[in-house]
View 1: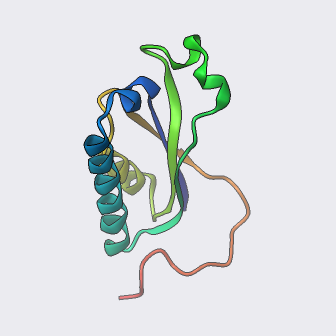
View 2: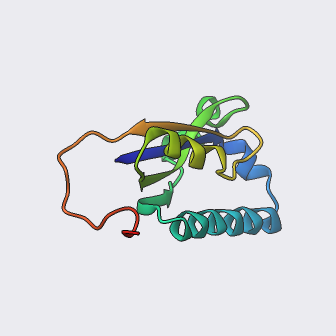
Length: 116
């Protein structure tokens, strides 16, 4: 089953990070993706989302305002496993992740885990 892991956080968290802290975040996210792949999770899609132009307005990018900053779509056998991966996601101080099952017609694809 496919699940979307929707990543929310304050844009101001990113704005306050130093270049080194941003690189550390990218490194943590690459390690997270590698861990999923090594565990047999099929990553359908993953992206850090660009900040929308409208987010530059004070009321959208201010303190306490959470925006969608990224997403992962993963193919795992159960919602419990998707939740487990969400719990391990590297997040900013204000970061949150929501797990949503993806509805849609079945796709022709490789199994999420190789046969034993």
